[in-house]
Image (cartoon, rainbow, N blue to C red):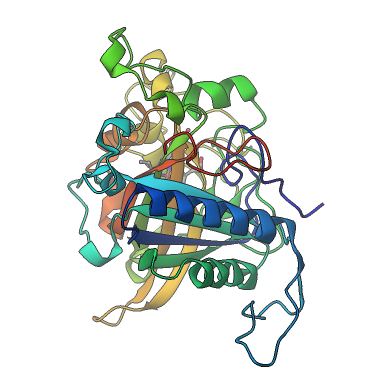
Length: 380
Ligand code: HEM
C-alpha cells in the first residue's frame, strides 16, 4: 500500500499523490566525462530502485563503516517514497557534449519583478525530489545517494517541505492549508484525468512549439515522457499577513478563508464564474486565482500541475520567521505553463506578502520503463 512503483513510462513523484514530507536538493555534477555521467545516472537509478522498494540493509562488518546510515534501522520500509530526478540547463553546457540534446525551453530560471533571488538557493545541474510519509525517510534517501556518489556530485542547496501529516494529498481532490492559512490545491489539475495529463504535463514525442511545424522546434526524442519542473522558494511574510484584515486576505486570493470556496460561494469546489462578474465586483480582477487562471479559452494552454509543500526554516537576519511555500509545478511546456501564469501574476496584491528567493527550472527525465534501464539512458 505504501510502496510507489519506480518503473513506468513516467517518473513517480509527479502525478503521485503527495505524502506529508518532501525534500528537494540541487546538485552540481563533478563527473569528468560523459562516461562518468552515465555511471552517476546508473547509480542514482539503482539507489532509487532500492530505496523506493525497501528491504534489509547490508549486514554490519565491524571493520568497515556501515553500508547504510542506519537512521531507519536494519530494515528500510518504502514509506511511500518517490525519488524524482531532473536535469538543469547547466548540464547541457560544453562539459558532456550534450548541447544539442537540451529540452527546447530549458534555461536558467527567469528573474521576475518581485523576485529577490539568492544565488546560493538557485539552479543546479540536477534536482532530486524525495517525497515520503516521513522526513526521516527522505533524509535517509539523501544520505544514501550522497554515500554512493563520492566525487560525482556536489551539494548545492536543499529545502525540506511539509504538509499536515494525516493526509496523502491527491492533486485536484484533496486540499490542505498553506502557511497563509488558505486551502491550497482546490483548483489543481485532476491527476486521474489521463488526457489532461498528456496534454498539460507530459512532453509528447516530437511535440513542437504551438503553431509551429518546424522540425527544429521539436523537443528532442529522448525527452518524450518527461516534464518541465519549476521549483520556487517563496517566502511568506507571515507576521505582516497575520496583521491583515480577513476581508483583505480573502480579496487577495479570491477565496474564502474558512471554506476555501470562491468569493460569494459556500462550496469549496464551486467553479468561479468570472463571465458574470466582468468588472470584478465579486472576485477582484487582480485576485490571485483570477489572474492565475482566468478560465477563458485563450488561457486553457497555461494550466499547470502544482505539487508544492510548506516550508519552515529558521529566522531571517532581521528577526522574522523564515517560512513559506516550496512551490513546485510540472508542465509540458515551460513557457505556455508556469511562465505564462507567473507573468499574469506579476504585480498581484499578494506580492506585498511574498518574496521568491530561490529555485530553478528543471526537466524531469522520462521514466525507466523496465528493470535494467536507467534514468537518462535516452539522453546519454
Ligand atoms: C491557486 C496560494 C504562488 C498558481 C491558489 C490558491 C491559493 C494559492 C490559496 C487557491 C486554492 C487553489 O486552487 O489551490 C498561493 C501562495 C503562493 C502562490 C500562498 C505563494 C506563496 C503561486 C505561483 C503560481 C500559482 C507562483 C504560478 C506561477 C496558482 C494557480 C492556482 C492557484 C494556477 C489555481 C487557480 C485556479 O485554477 O482557479 N494559490 N499561490 N500560485 N495558484 Fe497560487
